[in-house]
Image (cartoon, rainbow, N blue to C red; front, side, top):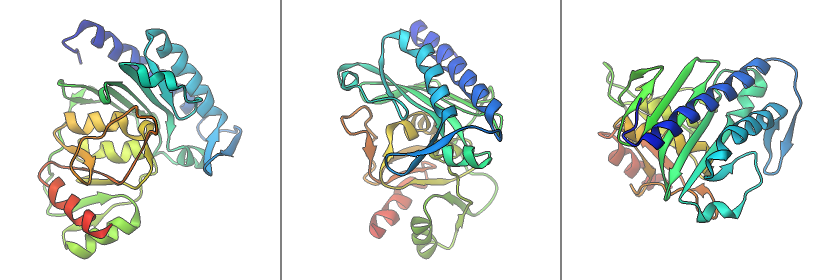
Length: 261
């Protein structure tokens, strides 16, 4: 994938290699012994998360852009930066610690509040998703689209409460197993493995920025229930309920969820 802007293309290559290397580092520790603990907010973290974060920072920080990562101390200087790296060194840490495969490295470059580059690498599933604004999405090197498959069911993933609301309202909803990595859950709309993916309240920028671009570049929609684009790199980088869906489903599903809130 080559961006029209030479500098942006170089940033995509840099980001892709950094994410691949962080994924390889994590995969080398997967299902092995490592230290883990609970941090503020009752969220798990491991020494592998920290090592991946350090690797990504070492590779990407020299670009001079702002930095926002789940595993770094927040620096308010990012708010004045035109471009900001938004990083989750391991999205789905609970799965990683438990030896399950639905975890990934998720990284985006955001410009003036919207992602322009996004890369998600799931080493355990051997999936690499790359997106550049205006240039589509690649899954392991092949273009993908958020399009319906040959079935008459709407495959949906997300918090049980909201899946129940959808199944109560529509008979064609097929609840799918929980995907612990929010980045992977959202991105599976882009690869047509899901038709609908819901993010509950308080998703953070690092959980969703890369997946946001990936869904949009695949022709899907990922927004708040009001249909407005998500804004990133705000002082408080968390969000209300969000919905990713095929473009032909998004408006109707958002309306159903809005009635249930």
